[in-house]
Image 1 (tube, rainbow, N blue to C red):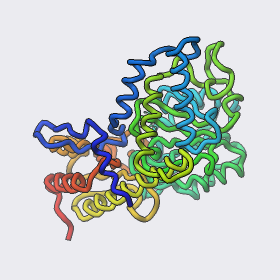
Image 2: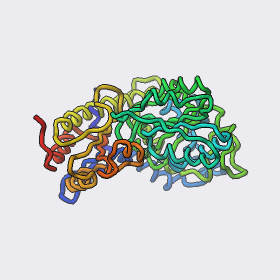
Image 3: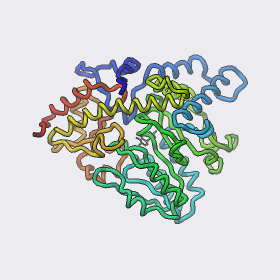
Image 4: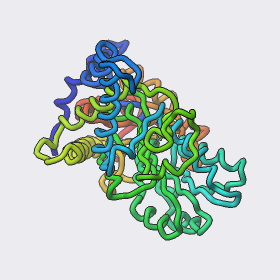
Length: 412
Ligand SMILES: Cc1ncc(COP(=O)(O)O)c(C=O)c1O
């Protein structure tokens, strides 16, 4: 396992201190990671030297064209996609998902079915619920007590009426990773499309759409050290067939077909820089950029999981803490730990940790159905700790001490 904490120097924000003068501990990554100098510089460099609209007959416009093309090529490498023509950009994942739902929904007929899951972020539920107005039926795949999908119930929902299964790669609330290959197989058997929300997984482990072969996959660069921008992978040729909302001069084929209006070119320069930063962490022995990024993501996974073990072990010995989601080290999962403290609402826990300079999220993180199913609505939802390659073991110990100081006792 490579120690990746050397990458801390790349993040200017990590030198910030809180109100009490202590260095801040950034465990808020699932809401958006910190951003390295390389990304900040690439965005600034764009505005200083290349700022123009695309497809013009002058130097800055041609440079902008190259920046957009490069971002597609780099995302193709990151996702293991077959061509850069399968990569579209948009404002964020939620907006791209709504645009897709509008376009796909136009080809669905009343009585056709879409399956969503109780584990998902609402960004991958509400766009599909919007289709019910047209008589499309949305079915909800339930979860079990440990916040994993109930696979028997899931399988029973599939039928020849299923047109789309929309589900997450990993839960942004509790870290569960879904058995995507199995579900891909099931969707093939009934002739359904499959859409994967990889927003929470993309910062934590490799993605290979060439292997999984989803029809659509979405992620957001601001979760993996980049700027606020959404990315859509659509299987080759698929966008060409969809009636996306578009202005008449817009390209009638993918990847531009779903890109309404002018893209954020500076942010696209930042996307390439974010991927270059990831590639700098490991994988320089690999023959291709895709191989390098893949290996770097495996190293991020291994590093974050060594810290996750420490955090989980510490928390599981504390009383009265309840932990949610699959146990650590039993399966592949995201390095995201959520818990509640008995007799203390989650906002108070997050507030108290925030006062100690430990930045954590509380609530449902838009995974509303999951929090309701776990019966935690009255509690104010969960407290969520998210790890990143810039997290250190010292920060984990500091966090455990701060949680301990909330009046939580060690068990046994
Ligand atoms: C799992 C998951 N899906 C979707 C989203 C929405 O992404 P965006 O903010 O890019 O719309 C988020 C954001 O937190 C997320 O965690």
